[in-house]
Image 1 (spheres, rainbow, N blue to C red):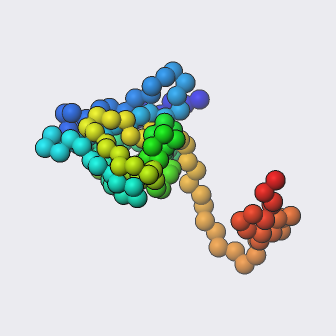
Image 2: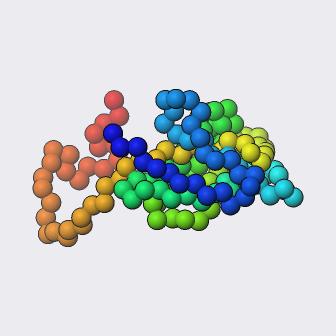
Length: 151
């Protein structure tokens, strides 16, 4: 298996470089990089904010970075990513920011350096798109949401 090289460029000296928290972890933890003048973000229930991480990166061609919620924040506080998983494309070179939503019932405060999300680097296929007049038949056909049953 090929191990992709993820190049990280700090945009703020206080930024935390993404890292795996265990040997078998699938995701690298992403940390908030908040301004020194405002080292906290207060999220009321229902609030959505973009949290800067203080770095930019280069993802190899043929890969994407999927930004996902941290399970502890989601299960204990209702803090998650509204577009989860969000995709960072291999040609993006701007600052990594994480959209965070508070689905909990209580106000939640994000502090500078706090681990707020996880990022999974995954291979992607670039499909060839072909317009056709008909599609092949399947047993499911055009059955949509719930068409294969719920049990």
